Amino acid sequence: MRIFLLLFLIFPLAELYVLIKVGSSIGALATILLLMLGGIAGVLLMRLAGFATAWRARERLARGELPEREMLQGMLMAIGGGLLFLPGFISDALALVILFPPTRKLLFGALTRRIEARAQRQRAFHEDMQARSGPQRPNVIEGEWERRDRDQ
Image (cartoon, rainbow, N blue to C red; front, top):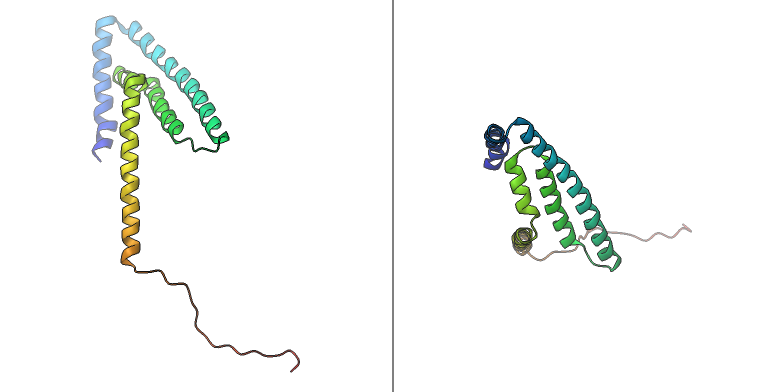
């Protein structure tokens, strides 16, 4: 719930504050041009990153491998491009942190560790639930039957 408070209330207010400060320092026209340049760069980056990631994923699929690394890299690039597309200087700074290759590599490693830890917890929970329910018995329907010949 806190993340939504941050995203929908505090973040836009912070962006507005920075926009006003930058606009009063360099002028309104220069601020608007910088915002437009950031938006254009975000759209171009999302397109280029999307094509490059799709190409690498396609190559891995052709080799019979799962493209999980490419999908995660593409997701990070899309988040960075989307942040660049948003009007504001704070979102542009966050986008540059995500898009800068060394920091993206650190984010990728942290995200991978978090996903693996979550998968381990889910697997352990599932195995624990199976152990509690006891050994699985086959579905058996008991009943009586009688064979009748068609001649009768």
